[in-house]
Amino acid sequence: MTETLFPSPAWPVLPVEGQTGSYPVHRIFCVGRNYAAHAAEMGAEVTRDQPMFFTKSALAFLPSGRHSAYPPGTSDYHFEVELCVMLGQPLFQADEATAAAAVYGYAVGLDMTRRDLQARAKDARQPWDMAKDVEESAVIAAVTPAAQFGGLDGKRIRLLQNGDVRQDSALSDMVWSVPELLSRLSGLYHLAPGDVLMTGTPAGVGPVSVGDRLVGEVDGLTPVSVTYTDPE
Image (cartoon, rainbow, N blue to C red; front, side, top):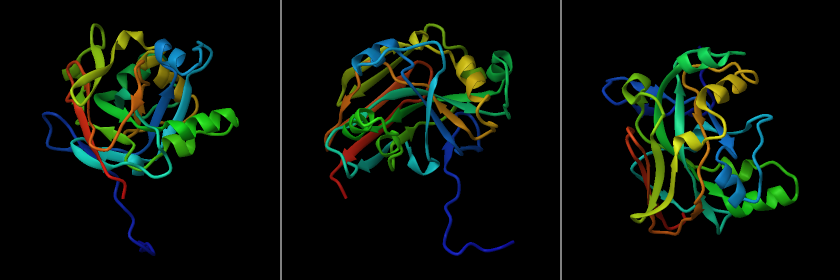
């Protein structure tokens, strides 16, 4: 086996509730405008033509419960709490039933965003990469297996900033369901175990400041948390 010219990091992993093994994080796919109220607060409308996908590198991953330095290049860093879906089987051009059966588990995540860079990119009709694929911007909690979590019906998603509720919505408010999203995404990629889908955020997103502690919650899942420190 050929040695690398410099150290290459291993895939990041997540703990799994009730399991001794860990879940490796390979690719992180994200969904934009999957809650109508959030789309409206961002000045956009939702459609049922095609989900809006974008990506974050696995190098953007940060385990829950850590401190994170306020990132460079922004003065308007925003929180977005999301339900994360972890794949356990390969998917390609799958129907919704097959996609649903391929889910290994769920977790709570934070899709942190350089909102000022995103607004600038939107105005210039440019990609969002520098706004979304930010170091330590995919904060994800422990995985709960799908059978243990059960269905999404009746469950809520929320975010607390320093103990105050900022986001609170029903998971049923998602424009695109999890099976629909995975089915559509599998028409674009050969999906595999280790791929993570962050399913979009409800209304109420806002900026964080140094010293803030964020806690994201979904009923039935382990909460995600992060505390922001001075820039490095």
